[in-house]
Length: 394
Image (cartoon, rainbow, N blue to C red; front, side, top):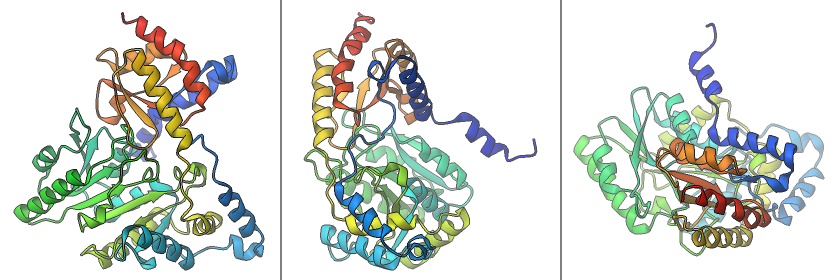
């Protein structure tokens, strides 16, 4: 084969989440959208807030050459200043400065840039299972090994002791995602403080440097629980963010990487992030939507519809006898499969036009992820199918 076989393998394998979503789209075309209960992909069903449209219209009034020109590689200065000022208002004076930010094409680019900036071949990056499957792709493409550490199976908080045991002299970073995709867990401050202690202790024991990569696209999608600001707990933190969820802009691919000024390796990391973005071609994030986020940086996320869906789904599945983890954030429900093989469970569900995602791809067998960022009618109307599925195991 004359092409890159590694890239071929990634392309041929595809994402299980997107494959199910594609199947759902085909079935909707065949039998009608109302007859398919697609809980596969995390595509926000809440419209973007009206401030987004106003910001687009305001930007569109600019001279075309100005609007559509290249920006600096790390983003327009006034946009980075707007983001930094917002972070300072929310998390304190040491949260960020404009030059600590690198604007990106969404969280995928943010994470890929970060892993390439940190890792050299042979390094290891720890992820907390269950985790977003693409982490493995981005970590391995940066030349590192993805090391899975199972979360506490009762609370789905980080199993801090297990993380400590998994750290070796090759560990470059630990990735956390809170609120978590796929479970919806929010890591408590106590959990994160314990994790920070273990990371510092292991650094000292091994004579190494360990970074904490905090992936935060769901930070604003919460139901009362507070999401701690991780850089205030562990100084060697890098934050990756996207507006895909908070502003319902998944298709616009806009986000950022933050190296907080409190990070002791700040100057070297900022250069490495910029160099990684250059090498990967992630420079000059979309100019129009850079301007949009500057105008909408403090617009609150509309979580009311997700909260209503969450209640309807948990109430309905609870009445039917399903076991699930109550989500504190994001818009996914982690439901126990009715048989040990979650893939077989999903195949049986598919016969009833129910489309959850098996947990195996998330690094944790025996569960399914049910994405409730769908129409409320989809949840209500799916309950008869969920009931038939449960009955089939009786």
